[in-house]
Length: 213
Image (cartoon, rainbow, N blue to C red):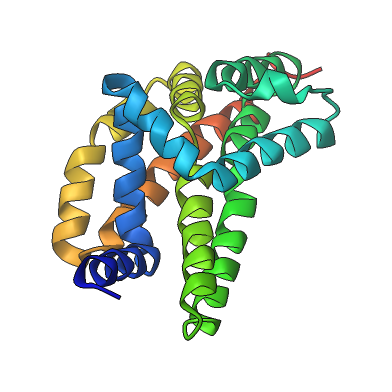
């Protein structure tokens, strides 16, 4: 194994073992969807196992809630937003929010499983690298897509306008958390954003029946 291969393997292990680093990469991938979609699509092809699990989880959640979906209707991110709109109209903003983040429920366990398998087979390089690739794929593609995030943020702001103040403060909170906690600050900031959106939607659940039956 030459120096280049060792460097690539070392980078992959460094990424896979640091969830905070992968969250930063995921944020960069979200930006690429808007400014360099071709590169983002190429990366999606490389990480296709995670993307397939992302789609499958969305479909499973929709069917669990009683919505019939077709696979072809879930292949594009715009269709993901359409399904969120259907759930919002017929159920509630909280269910739309849960639909948007549902892939995390399968991505994280699979990421941990494949990372463990990569470590278990570390002496068999080809098998270890395969599980390492799967672990990275599950994590990066299992996170919410740009459409998932954009729609849930819009719902949160519509339901609770004050939430925009807390969301605007996210960059400052990220900087402070990173300064205080290092890599852990990224995870704390992400949890902060999810909490703001969740509380905005839960407040609507308790105070109004506009979206209920």
